[in-house]
Length: 97
Ligand SMILES: [Zn+2]
Image (tube, rainbow, N blue to C red; front, side, top):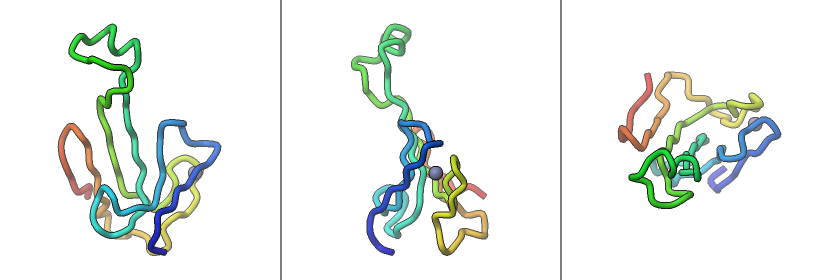
């Protein structure tokens, strides 16, 4: 399977994306969960450095084997050595061991 895919289920939060892609982590297609935290009206009121609603505050992309919300098995060849790639926009790229 070498094409973009997306998993959605009734358990996942609406702003979270679970997808099969090669855009973010490395050139190989992989299942990943993506969190984008965007500024709300309340965030703008509390932080004067923010300028617009919807401005990205923080993001995190992490490789996964299964959907973290419903548990569905997504990856056929499981990562079994603990070497999941994780990118935190505040810290750059990390390998999680
Ligand atoms: Zn799910």
